[in-house]
Length: 114
Ligand code: 5GP
Ligand code: ZN
Image (cartoon, rainbow, N blue to C red; front, side, top):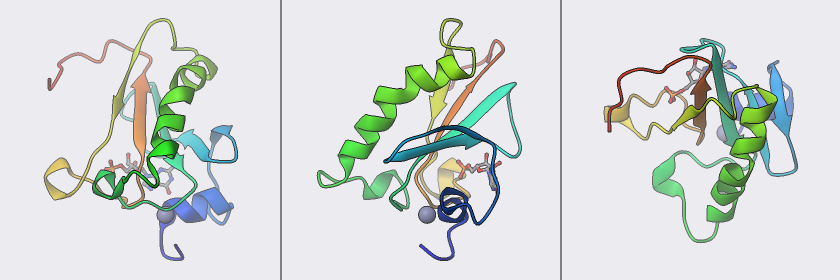
């Protein structure tokens, strides 16, 4: 999608700090980290948000979760633990409308929402 900041990052039009990449997904460090490790994992296919995950494209979400442990290991936090967050829509504060999962850790993350 031409006006999507994460599509531009995936294409290399906007620079990013890559952590992991394969044919389906891209993972990179968040520009404004909220924890010592704060990685964004995105599908290369433009999907706006969790609302638009369907049986036709859900395989990429399964693929992301199949790689989470490997990406956490690359960041050195696999064994100590981490949190995965997806914000969908206004009330969750989603700011970039290209589906992404925040992988956060590197410290005790403290209070849980759930
Ligand atoms: P959301 O609030 O939509 O769940 O998360 C969007 C995330 O994208 C934020 O944590 C924000 O810091 C990050 N972000 C926004 N623009 C850029 C960018 O140009 N580069 C990188 N690496 N992260 C970005
Ligand atoms: Zn996009």
